[in-house]
Length: 305
Picture 1 (spheres, rainbow, N blue to C red):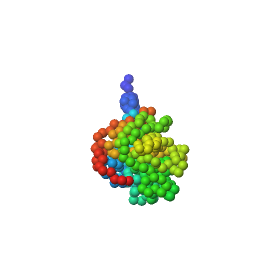
Picture 2 (picture 1 turned 45 degrees about the vertical axis):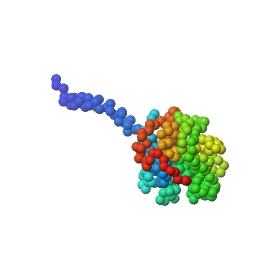
Picture 3 (picture 1 turned 90 degrees about the vertical axis):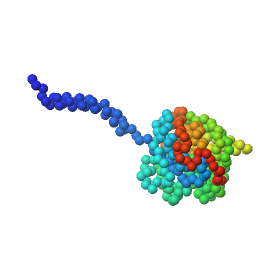
Picture 4 (picture 1 turned 180 degrees about the horizontal axis):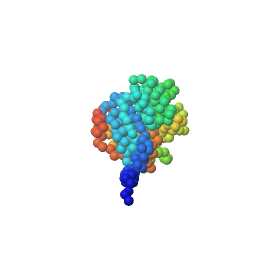
């Protein structure tokens, strides 16, 4: 008795299905994998001498670090050198990282528009990280009593340039940066480090000092000739659910070579984006700093702030 031809077709179909089906679960899992959190890294205007601040190169460097962490899933990062004109670029952003001379929105073409759009991001719980001088506000940016949205979004700021209510200090010196005690995610892994840089101190956290939702992360005894424990990195848990971190370092581009400083910054960015910070911190390896195309790796004569 001959086997009907359709039997062979069915058998062949099952063989083909058996051969292909092992691919299905992995394809399904890949399709179901959530996209990595997106971080927008914005390099604001920078007029410091080569080798100092290096906002554009610093932004490119941070993009490399968050996309190539060790022991942690990477983030997605986009570097911009101005605020995006296309609102679509902001739709899936989990955190905004600013680097530049003064809080960059205050130095962009339309500060009111940029701050309004940034406020909308903050209201939906977006994170915020400001690096070194990007934590700074001048007298013309704040009210007489020091109020500014950055105080609420970040928990504090570097008050410079004729602020009527407060005067922070910046000075190039040898500083030892020490993590505070506690179990905050940004504290994981990194240890105290000493380097030549320009920390800011007497930073402004409101007329009554840091609010209850502000956590000091790092301190330094400043200035050396009259030392007092000063907060040089802090985090805030905002009522809108967002997270902010201010780090008043680094001034010199070469300072990015310090492993513990990089871990502090990486932990801060991951935390702000609500990504998991491993128990040992977010580790990184750094290629030659010249890779990120700074004007110079080594500092030139500095300008006064």
